[in-house]
Length: 376
Length: 162
Image 1 (cartoon, helix red, strand yellow):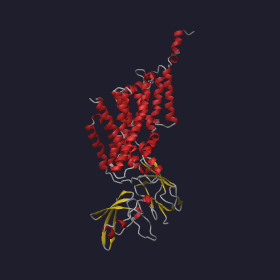
Image 2 (cartoon, rainbow over the protein chains, first blue to last red):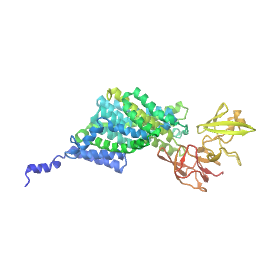
Image 3 (cartoon, chains in turn yellow, red):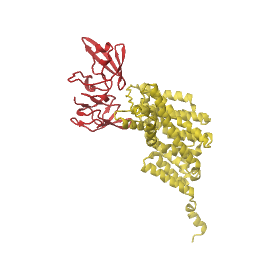
Image 4 (cartoon, rainbow over the protein chains, first blue to last red):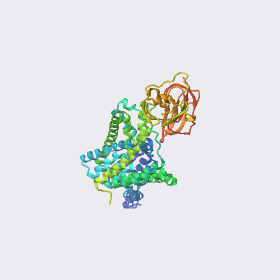
């Protein structure tokens, strides 16, 4: 016969089920659904959902002190290793050619970061502390690793909701952006054609670009050095062609492995009591604001450029300045193509998009500098 | 930028045509610069002047249709009729709007197409772009095969003279 104590031990899984953990398991199901059925950033949402599910099962050994998810978290989130490793891969996949062909697009990348700072102010009004508000604002960088990097340093307790907001909304770029783009532009503006410039960028320029950017940005915004350094390292390896195996490993094997680890570790931070707070809802809401403001600022700034240039800039391209590389650029091309099947803005949009990628990192560094965190 | 080297009356003219926008070109003859606006563009019957030499011939962006250098040197922009492929009519080629790889071809020589009909799918920056016919007409030549890498301005198909 089992005595009540033994029975209690055997049944402790069931007795430790809490309402919060049930709700979070439900949340993980939603994330699985979004990733698997809806195809929203599945590479990240599926591991995050798994981490969330596994961390919220009763008494989960995975988040005990030496549990796997905890180990992953300490290994790569606390010290920012994972987002930086992913950045090498992103750099190896990013083609800065269209930006080098049309350097003025860099302005659009800067405009696309406006949402960060407006959202920061909004978050302060919601009653978040300054580091928390900065971490929420960085959702407006619309770049997952940058968001993780900055919030990991400034407000690690908000990593879960911020990451989920950043990646979920990023996958919604094709849905969020087009209405903003159409609302803010006239049909005539959307029909502006921008011929491909066809400038040939020499190999030397392509190789020097990542080095020069690293030195410049690293000197001007030291807090951005880790991110820009890794991004540009990946790009240098790609453009130099000298280390093809490392380039491939960075953009495939390493990026894939780290994505899995990162997703699991982030998911494991979504534990019931921590996640189920009004602040999570506020973060999800502010995240949408950040995305929208970025898009609006990008398009409006491109309209300004269009006026200054005498009608040569299609304002749609501004929407690509938000980062979310390369999805935002594709959305721009798609919207322009719907209006005029002979209009190909893709290369210009890619240029603005790559600029947005760099600008996101710089903005992240500026935020860290303003908060006085992350350096030595 | 496209460079034309023309022999005319024993003299050689080097003319550079740079596309600034769909209807604006910078034309350099010797050390003279002209900014040229293209306001109309039509084929005159039996016009035998065709630009381009070799396989990249046709009317890709920035390719002028052999204007008379003498007139141009005199700064008569009306005589300059370079044209972008997007508005090409007549014996023209549909040119690749940006560099990429041709993934699919949906027409063959002899096909009659409507304006906007899908001609090819061009993979540029890992995005599949549908290339539509710039005008109605008959396809006389397919200039690429699926899987081929194209540069900006390379002809994809040629239309019959109408």
